[in-house]
Image 1 (cartoon, rainbow, N blue to C red):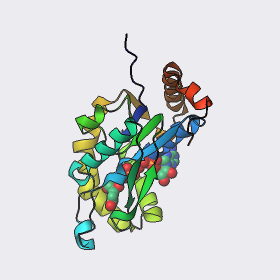
Image 2 (image 1 turned 120 degrees about the horizontal axis):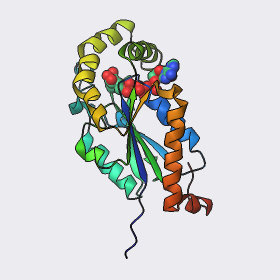
Image 3 (image 1 turned 90 degrees about the vertical axis):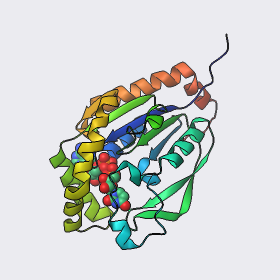
Image 4 (image 1 turned 180 degrees about the vertical axis):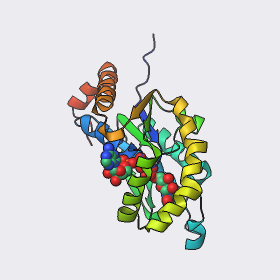
Length: 224
Ligand SMILES: Nc1ncnc2c1ncn2[C@@H]1O[C@H](COP(=O)(O)OP(=O)(O)O)[C@@H](O)[C@H]1O
Ligand SMILES: O=c1ccn([C@@H]2O[C@H](COP(=O)(O)O)[C@@H](O)[C@H]2O)c(=O)[nH]1
């Protein structure tokens, strides 16, 4: 019998903007400390808009699948799955385009991919072993988004509200929410849901142990 080739475990974490995807991804990452892990954010793969004016960038619908460079994301995720390092784009929310720099990312045994539209593309879904949907009510998400976008993404209250009503909300209902049907696990309450985070971490530890990757790690393979 031929031995099956080992590959990293890919966990997809999706949900609406402000649902707690980043918080949940970070919580899983923290629980699995000591293993070989990385977090990849779909936001890093927004289209490069360097050739566009600021006014043009402000008019873009950032909640539509066409705003993302899926080809590059799939190419780089496939490289990571094949244990090849990537030069990841870095997205600048204040300038609404990619920054000039890229970030070197070495491959790891566990890849946590998070983003609003990662389950929309069947090619991406096919690369995932576990699919998680963080389900948080719209009112909570908009409150979190207002606070975060003003404090961290250089936005005004008016611009956050305007964008939410014009694109973020309708696109959520048109494109993001329907992908819930592809999830293996729906997590209410996001980062506060320690039971769901414990269950997920235990499942990943089980798979790593079956693959012998916990042993590889102990023998001196890369950490974080
Ligand atoms: N359970 C929670 N309670 C309070 N604030 C939270 C909670 N989860 C996330 N936040 C905050 O809400 C904002 C959005 O959360 P984040 O995890 O970045 O969501 P997403 O990645 O889905 O946009 C962040 O500022 C985060 O600190
Ligand atoms: O230039 C940009 C790029 C993205 N956005 C908004 O960000 C969210 C996705 O990020 P989360 O971390 O999941 O909230 C998306 O809803 C876009 O509307 C932006 O405003 N400008």
